[in-house]
Image (cartoon, rainbow, N blue to C red; front, side, top):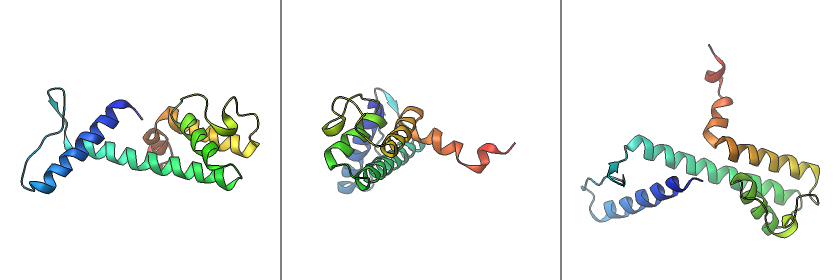
Length: 130
């Protein structure tokens, strides 16, 4: 995830905590001096939810194929975030993984590189209509 998304998620979370104490308050989430509109914040929350869902789904698929938790978690983290090496069996390279695991992680790399929303848009029927 990009750093700006994490910052905006934290600021939005803080704003919601303040709203619990002061429900009628009008608080803007700002980056520098620029107030973010609500649609942008909703999009970032949507991205985060889908990101977490894809992350854990891919991790569970790897665990179901026989990999341990550490290897599965770090392999998904490394591929979806384009980080490089992982931990466990993928510490030095991915050669010990099965072909199915490599296909799953290849999908994870594509999701991370293209961004999740871009990939989802490609699979919608409206995208292919003229």
